[in-house]
Length: 104
Image (cartoon, rainbow, N blue to C red; front, side, top):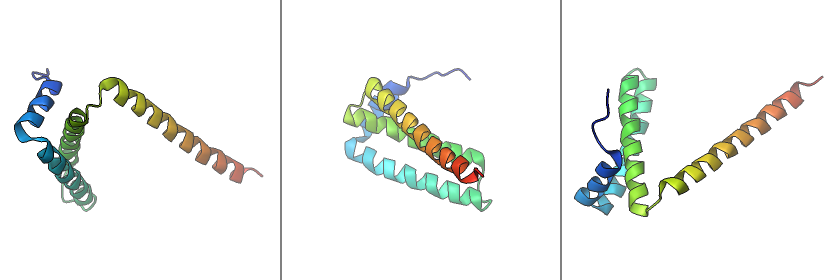
């Protein structure tokens, strides 16, 4: 499917149309809906597509909050990279401890 919309423009327009306070409220609501969908999926009460819909809703709200706070792509991506590297380091520590504990 070809994208026929401009995400950044839609986010800007949504903040303008719905207001900043509503963005915070909507973010909390979308996080809650994602948590519910995950729990429902684990009990066989919804599909993976339902979870994906809620994940996209959360991502949209994250983008809206980035707009509200003025977090540009450069800052966001720099911090995202740092956080991925931090996760990698934490995983490596656990893997090294497991290998140490398995050693004869």
